Length: 178
Image (cartoon, rainbow, N blue to C red; front, top):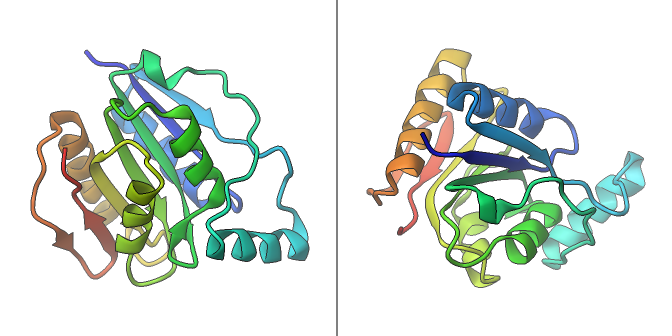
């Protein structure tokens, strides 16, 4: 049985819901770590800051986490996609807390049509190369469909086998090279 860390950032709660769903699917070998920024993003000013930092690819300061990603066999990192990029807190966590040799898979929530640019952006900042990537539009995908897609995402992440890109109407999924 391998140990898995599910680390996530959530501003509105959608990614938190998805992270908890993934952790429950994994079972007792999963630990959960919420990523917290040093400066919270509250209200309208927080939203404007979110857009500005996403566009400029900034990485905010984070609070230290409780769990060390190096202690896990697999780390799932998730957050919302803003302006075609993963939230700045996710980018900071991936760049600063994850060693290049870490077996990592990324997941995201989004409202937009495609997540490929977000995964490519993570590779540009030097984050660990993903064994699997998956994004979902929380309100657009029925629960039973989302669950089946998450099962496939977890299977790819656990097996670390790269596969061909997959596109679905309700969700976007990309498999990165392992």
